[in-house]
Length: 274
Image (cartoon, rainbow, N blue to C red; front, top):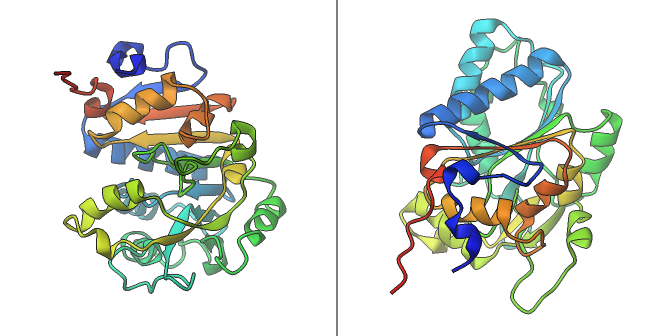
């Protein structure tokens, strides 16, 4: 068994530059993530943020807080990390059950008062026809203020999948990967199928993602983990090797990275060796 799997909750993050925060249940994670996003916007009304759909529960909370606080978000740019694609590398339709664009419209943008909602041009997804355009957009706004996200079962952040078995890439080369179109790993498609009752055939095979280059260049990295199965991968991220085989391990190279975990993630994984 890997030594990092034996790391206790109290030892999480020790010896690394990544700050660790431990909260309670999934609801507390959602509230904290909404509060953190709200704070970025309060401090900078024209903030540029990279955001996930996964975790997801923070968006209705954030919408309610923005409306009740009358917080003008028209100049805020929200860059979603990724989106599923069809086999011909077009966006899946917004009425697809897994469309992140559809979810953002339903759970967030449509809930905001019309005079507070980010302008349409500031609601951004990487474009599968021109992924490189995202970097120019970011440069024009002076960089990304904060990147929020989760961590996948194979250590991916956004849809930056690790090299397949038999493939190798240095951590430095992986960190320089830009926004791009790619094929999803079987591990990602399998764990994501849980949201549709285990129907892996429903999960698209292709996606577009914000690159590691854009993520790691953000001034602040704020990642959240709220699922029991993340107990092992969080330990690998924090205490395993820094490697392209576990993309989120590269957070340890950033000057201002923080991971907030639910109590079920902080608890060591239950592994019995027979």
